[in-house]
Image (cartoon, rainbow, N blue to C red; front, side, top):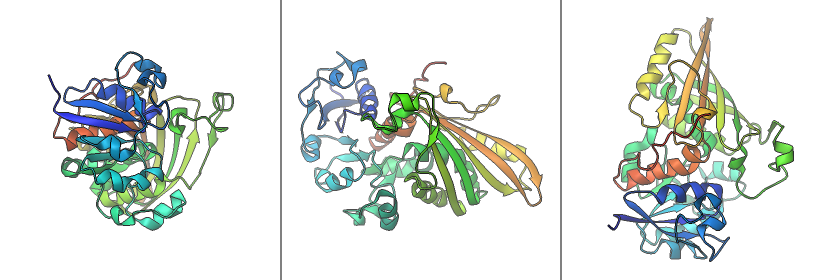
Length: 351
């Protein structure tokens, strides 16, 4: 029986592309009709993604974004930052809905884009509301109505979901400090000196400290959610993991807010969220979410010290799934009027 919708993946030869393709191939309502890439042209999908060997007869096609989008209901766009923005006007002209996994349309401010991505935005007029920020836990209703969604970054997703209950309650104010460690797959399929196995396997190293491109994204999103005079000091750390992000964020809140109130806030905020877990008997950990679209959040509350108390907020995600491909599919499902959980309910393995 024919499926209701057709989708194309553009930029499908990377790690995120593999995860999108894998899940679309078993989607009950969306047919993966086309996979475009500048690599592996004419070769089967399994040439780039060995786990998908024999899973489909599709081959990588050397098509422009506009060609790939013709006749499609939705496009999942996996082009690199800066490239995506260059191709977006021709893609939008096709009439297809778009979920963009790059950072090119996450920000509302062109000056911030230039500051963190190093170039002038080629179509700054599209930064003012053309794209909905694709964090379902914050923007679900807007995503349902959207034609264009900017899917959040992996660090941004992990940190935002740890702090979103505080922002919505009006309890997040001022500057927070975050350290987040990440797996090597977040650096993409093309190896570099910093991601080469011998220097990564038994090592911890920081990169872009206090200057990561997800900083303005987090700032904008949590301010929109209700944070006051909010800013973040963020230090990312490369870890000897393939998948996963673990973030620790220190927040100073009003001492009058009790531990019981804080824990109740998190449980209530995420009670009906299909992919956010607040463990009752432990704190978040990467192995519990690796291979899945689930996020774990939790907190440790410090004693009151004068007018403030320190709260350590913890969060864990799989950077390729909830931090990338899975969240994009979650938004795609919402945009098409489908159950957002489709193809995303598997829990991954343990350990």
